Image (cartoon, rainbow, N blue to C red; front, side, top):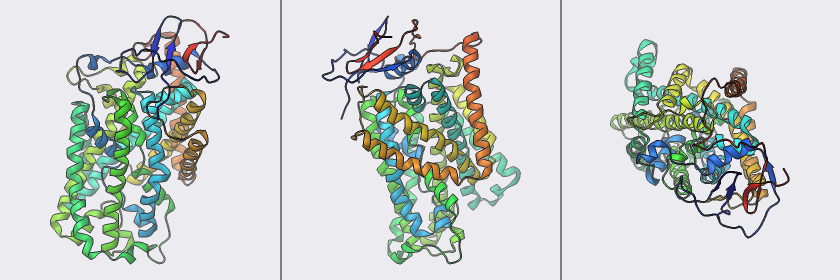
Length: 522
């Protein structure tokens, strides 16, 4: 179900937000109905139009390849999951039954709504920057900048978890990596090496994700098949061992961490081939693929293996593989864990780096932050910034990393849900090549349910998480005003979105059923 193409008209230019080729003007299409005019400011117009009708970046003019459907599916898969690695603490926290129910029900509460919102808004605003553009178009530049702070910090904190997760699995084979200097060096070398791979190009990362995804899932598929004769269904309904207290903080954070970040891929929208068609198909496929990759091995292991509940910590799947099939499968699964960690790191580092690029294109960051490598056409400065920050937090406890990322991500998601609803109300006639098939009442319910979960995750957070998140938010507010000062004093050079110049006349604009047009009453 598609919306109506929008004709964008300013005092000096006229362009279309239709679903035509990126960077080309499409002929305006007259609307058959009209909606009440909604006044917006010139800053909002600048951001909305720059996102809606971007022109090719230099790399695109040079014929750089764009992401197609299959690589995008696996990039989304690695943005979110990368396999069943890391789902074990849900069993430790609440027992097999609640862990299984969590991975069955939570996708409907969280993953599907987030994927649907990402599909609609990424096709409506197919430019690098993703959720930054959505918040800015809905509520103005301040909220776009704050969204950028929350999501970027959540992303790079999340990135830091993957080298640590990788080493957690490796130490099962090589105990020397469990602590001290060997662990420090292992995390450092793996982080820098993986960042360099990301520097070589997004298309390479996309196809590498396909290979890594297939290879890392093979041992789980094999383990699940071998486990079938050993499964005892009564084990699935266990609420855990008697006397073991439920850890709801660990349980909710494990589910949340394993099934979120669906919107991260939106920052790559400007690098996707035919995003209006590719994004919805890729997100739909990735949801099914990802959720199946979690639930099938969980059912196989909880149904076939009986161990002390405390053993269900990160990395236990490898031990389960040895119990079910032997040492050979444990080693294969450990190798798969390393490959999965590589895919997770690459996909999410790409998202963070291209968010920096998009923010530079939109004028939220100085123009220098949008610089690309001459060799690989990748945003090398964005990659470097994300790498350095992730290294700075990579030596934290793994659970603390997850909790911190979840909290600031939750703040960003609450703003994202609000932006989605407000854009539906504010710009009802805006062109949406993919539209969530619900009216206003439906989208409100769809957003309120996961929002309630977000509030729950935030309320049960530790005091240190509240403190760190508050400091991050204050830093984001300070950064916004610092950037405005730099603009007003002309200390740094800023872009205004893919070559779009700021509106020179201080006039308001209205969006009607016929699209963007000058408000004659302003």
